[in-house]
Amino acid sequence: MTAQETDLSTDRSAAPARGKADRLPSLTGLRFVAALMVFATHILYYTPLIGGETGQTLREAFTLSGSYGVGFFFILSGFVLTWTARRGDTTTSFWRRRLVKIGPMHLVTFALAAILILSTDRPTRAIDWITSLFLQQTWVPSIQMNSAVNGVSWSLACEFFFYLAFPALWFVLRRIPERWLWPALGATLALIVGAFLVATYLVNDQPRLPVFGVDGEASYTQVWFVYFFPPVRALEFVLGIVLARIVMAGQWPRIGLVPAFIVAVAGYLAAVRMPYLAGAAGLATVWTAPLIAAAAAGDERRSPSVFRSRPLVFLGEISFAFYMVHWIILVTFTELVGPTHVFSTVTGWLLVPVLLAVVILCSTILYRFVEVPLVQRFGRHRVGADRTGAGERGLPTAGLH
Image 1 (cartoon, rainbow, N blue to C red):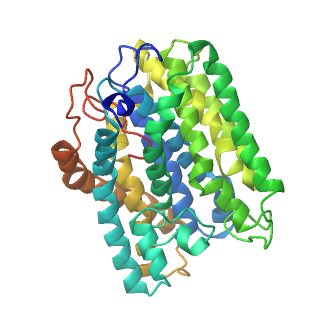
Image 2 (image 1 turned 90 degrees about the horizontal axis):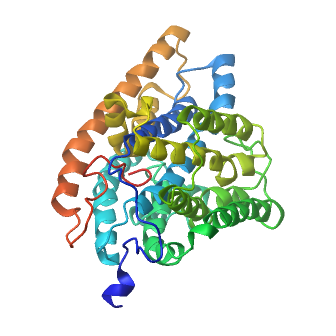
Image 3 (image 1 turned 45 degrees about the vertical axis):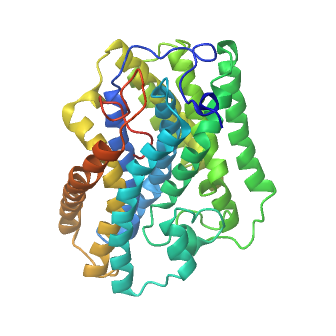
């Protein structure tokens, strides 16, 4: 390939120049909100802290909060990578920075999860170890493989695919004329609807899956297609790319952060009442797209934003570590106390913030001593760019990380 062919910059002849904002702290703060939604689902399903009717009611209410948060991350990933595209960047430089960003954290948490698995004799095949290590575990519909080792790293496998595909996607999508951006967004939404219809009517619906909120509505193959399969989840990533271009072109309507947040909340309330295949993946999480666009546009205008507070921005910065380690901590806790242990109502509720604090502490340590040093040493942009890299001046790093 020639240097021109691998250039990932925002070509002014093909796409609009980015706005003045080099900092989008509201999006960083929102990353922690999304990570907390994932934590909420997992603490209710993977620990015995909240039992009885209260626990059942909460599990029904938050059964899709984790998937909603992950979908938000996928859209955010495409948005941020587009926003931070810079003149003079190359495919190899982009891939190197993304690998440095996700690789060390993945390897550390993979090792921690391996210790947990080996100490509990959890059935794990050689193929599960290998595919999880190399972030390839989501390409076949296997419930054991898809969630093997670190149970949340499946989404990182999807992001890994997004990063590999981004140079080719950006080569095409940056050339969409501004007048066609909204039709392109509509076409992407149509493809997301199409994926749901394919899963519902064309993918094998037997045997039905009776666990984790599915309740016999669909087969695991159908769930895998809409939830785990990287090319289908890449549609949300593409949605984020087109959405960023719309905001950068000044075409996003002036929707405030509060109305956009209300739309996202309403989208979740609708998701829990949809058929599982619709509520668990992209068809539901598209309602978080206005929140991402409104937060970015608001930061450009310096509009007030609660998500821009220093504590929330810091929590957003550690959210990748938070996401990657929280499942390990929750499962370890359950193994120590026993999955059938019954807590009193007071004790169970008191232990929820304790476990959250433990996860935040461990996340901070991983962020300070694994993520930051390696990114600063190996993950900086080395070619002549006109903008600093994501994460170096307050921009949220893409998606989960």
